Length: 221
Image 1 (cartoon, rainbow, N blue to C red):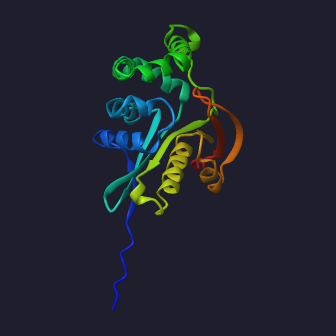
Image 2 (cartoon, rainbow, N blue to C red):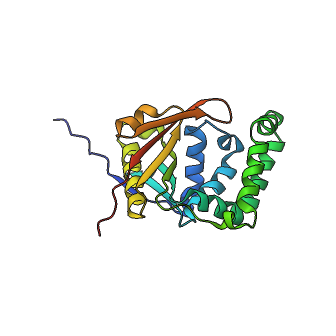
Image 3 (cartoon, rainbow, N blue to C red):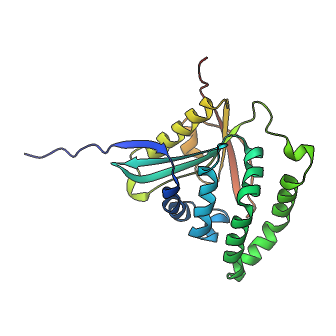
């Protein structure tokens, strides 16, 4: 007589400070595109904490039988969150990232060539003491799904869908009607969830990146 394997218990919860080291490590392993994974686990841990600590962001963890197996990070108010991150965490993030860059000549060259000028302009634009810099996001502006990743050993359980659905629901409950995301290689995943491809461009490293959007269910009055 064969015994039927128990169905794994999947839950989605808010990410806590104690999750940041694990989620940063998973980010580095699963999301290799872009600069941030190259800056190492210490930088990514600090970066994830900027989401955890912000009321303008969403940080979620999917667990399988009580063990963290995937995460999703999103932003409710992109412009306000950028300013908050730069003012509260910019120095620590900058020093941690710079230390990682300076010990790797190839990474320093890549950063100087592709990101130094646009990053410097963005920092100045978001920190300068003007009325425009203090202005919040426009009413009705879209939330952003920034990062999502699942442990290789837990793929096939629908964790990605559950994380996306939870982030979309949380965005709607916070008054956002639309959520956007940008991806290099996961277009088919989002389209399978009903997201719509709206535009395409190139990343700082020259890769084709697609932007997709979906509507969020709004809380009933």
